[in-house]
Length: 180
Image (cartoon, rainbow, N blue to C red; front, side):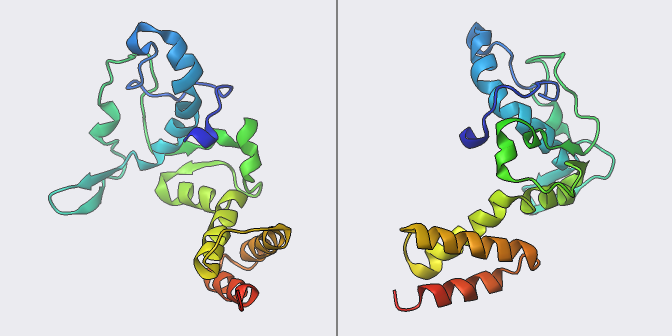
């Protein structure tokens, strides 16, 4: 999470399990811990009704019941946020992480894992990452020059505007890298 660390966002949704003075030094929380937890914890609420069942190897879903995992280590900082439901908010839409290219047609909040997945998947960063991974897989190399980066940008834009069809990304990238 180092890439999205931002200590300027509000800490109001950081849960009780995160100590505010780790090792007795609040500077650690204020300069490090807060930078990831202020964005991560509001998103993690999307999974409040899910639990992994180790014995049966599957996810369980308990509608309207926050799983016990959200109360683990709740005495670390009792005034911390208590998860009431599966409502998530994307705090990364503000501050430096606006650069990830969040979709303005989406509200930036929702309930449950599906809507949070849609929020992340509809960002410019996600689309660019998928196209770049395809490029490396198909071309057997990293993007090397301005032409490669321009192609990745063009394919990324097409990927987003034509319904996120990864098959098309593979096809267009393969044609570009033919003969390499």
